[in-house]
Image (cartoon, rainbow, N blue to C red; front, side):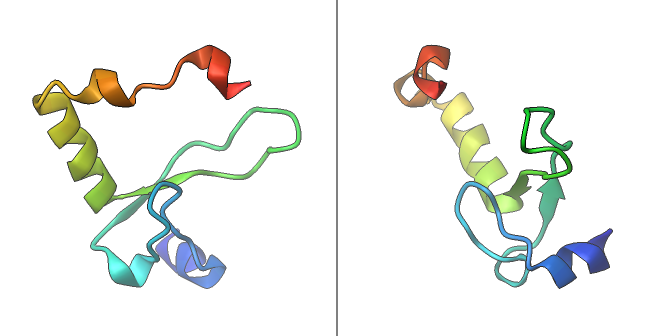
Length: 71
């Protein structure tokens, strides 16, 4: 899996950093939405750390996006 990710030039879906710029990148499950089958999103260890900091500081409410805005 890691070799395949490197060959595809995988980047974090949130910050855009490549595998060589971060320690780890985790692949999400493939999207089930029509037209996006077999495409995964990825998140790096740095974005996970930032999200955890947001949760810990209770600032998450300022950054949430309403589901109605995602359509």
